[in-house]
Amino acid sequence: MSKVKLPTPLPLQQFARCVNDTQRPADYVGDWPEAGRVYSVRVLPHVSTGKPQVHVLGFYAERPYGAFAAHRFEQIADVWLN
Image (cartoon, rainbow, N blue to C red; front, top):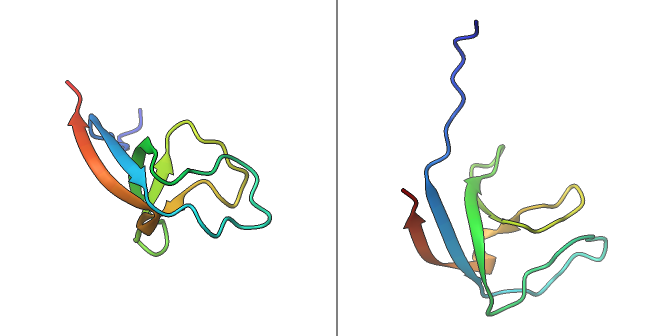
């Protein structure tokens, strides 16, 4: 039996408003956020740089994309789930 413990995500739902929807890469395939809309998101650190990245829940994107820079979003609310 393995004694490895995987990290458990917090029971938290985050919401953020898109404030910058410009500069979509030419080769980007997938959903792109619209300025002014509120999305349910998950903010996680980048694996190599440690800078926060925003993952919009329910969005599809082909690799190497899938997360957005934190400056594109304004955090609105954190809802603790019970």
